[in-house]
Image 1 (cartoon, rainbow, N blue to C red):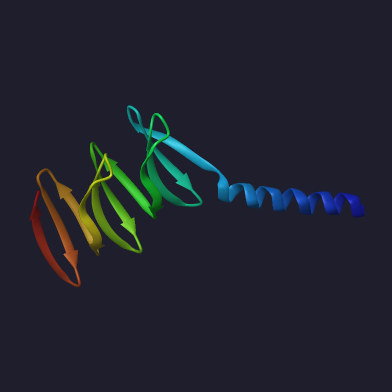
Image 2: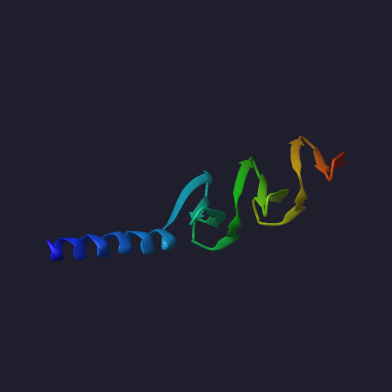
Length: 112
């Protein structure tokens, strides 16, 4: 019984430790993969090069742009990892060449 309990504890510890290192990836566009490591998201290319580090709470790609969430605030990046709008908005909604944002209770439209 003691050996079984010891094995069970080691197994649970191994799974818990492995989970933090586990990286899943999902192809979002040909040659680009959204990565998830411990609940933080990033982007790699087909060769495994890091385009966007796993530092975002969420990333939602719509074509070649993505809405990101970091520290509870929203921003906009492109598929190459270039920051279009920093993560400083309470809400953000792209619409073609315009982006509707709000920050500290004030709304505005930004032309890209």
